[in-house]
Every structure is written in structure tokens, then in C-alpha cells.
Length: 92
Image (cartoon, rainbow, N blue to C red; front, side, top):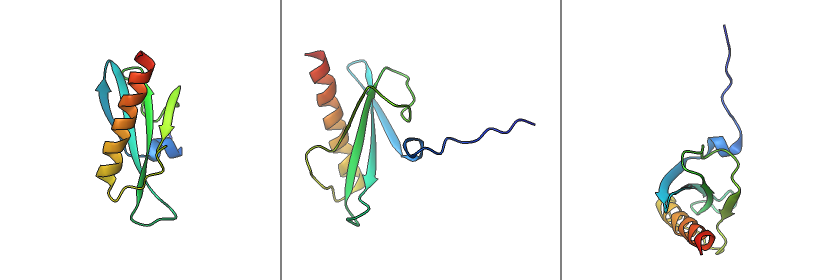
């Protein structure tokens, strides 16, 4: 019998959402603030199409605007906006 262990790295445990933007994958995960209950932040990864969102990416960002978001959905939306701007910067 072969035992396969699950990936338990923090990145693999995050709830990643992915959208394709200008031919690349933009992965966003909302993160609850440990020190600010009820507040959210995000992490963004930009990768080649089809790449695993939990894999390390050459281009990653965290909320750089020092904003805190009241809901998970707001953090995800802000993350995609940031991800799209990263892609646009790469293509310019």
C-alpha cells in the first residue's frame, strides 16, 4: 500500500481563487488578520497558465496598500485588482 501525504504547507492550505488575465493565471487568497479580528488582507501570485496556485511563483505580492478589508470578498476583489496591475506592469 502506498501512502501519499497531503501538502500541508501554508500556501497549500490557503483558499486560492484563480482568474485568467491577459493569458496568465492570477491567484488570490484572502487571509484573516491574526491581530485584527474581522479584518482581511490578501496574497497574490501570478503564474503561467495551469500552474498550481500553491506552488511558489516568480511574481507574488501581498496587500501593499496597508488597507484592511472588512470582508473576505473585499480582500479577494482587491487582490485581483492588484494582480491585474502586476500583469499590466509586466506587459508594458
